[in-house]
Length: 262
Image 1 (cartoon, rainbow, N blue to C red):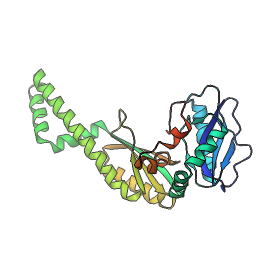
Image 2 (image 1 turned 90 degrees about the horizontal axis):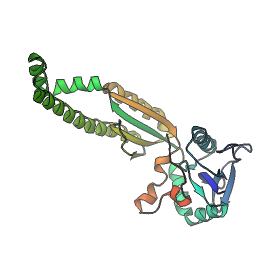
Image 3 (image 1 turned 180 degrees about the horizontal axis):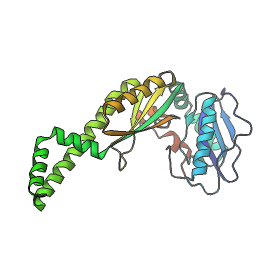
Image 4 (image 1 turned 180 degrees about the vertical axis):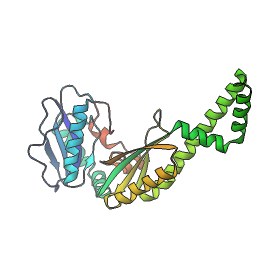
């Protein structure tokens, strides 16, 4: 059957609600596996595990309950160990790393920010900034649209300018918000987003960070910002192990389903 792992906490962590339910249909009861100074929040794993919305929300709900009572290292959806004994073994073998991460992430949350261009707004900026593009566009317009070659030339110039602007805006976003966060992690590039950044923010600084996001939004109205948080600090669980060339925390237990953190 396997043991599904939601996250790692200190053994001294406040008790979780006794009726807390996790993933699966019917939902599996959540329990705690303890080993030394550490513990893992787990349940039995379903026979077939898929990233369905119901189970993704259940995974998040369990982590929210754990984080409400103290710091928790979140595992990404789909972390399954063969059994409870394997979970205990991993906790013992990587105790130093897990304890360091629990200490480092105590009192923090993750805020993920994705940025994209408002197409019409960024085109206006490019036309205002680039005389060569503006001149060619005016020439084409006066000629009734221009030749096919001129249209292609204009399109290529605009596409290159947009790409250049994407890189510039991504760096501006990073520079503006990084000083307001403890750490920054760049997410995987995905189609449609010019920037995908996660910020580790101390809870006491969350209001200041969000004010910084809003100020950046006002200063750059050609950007569409999507803010998701506060979240469990998924992107910062393995900071130390990554720097030391060790395997990731989730991989230590094994992953059997597509991973997602929203």
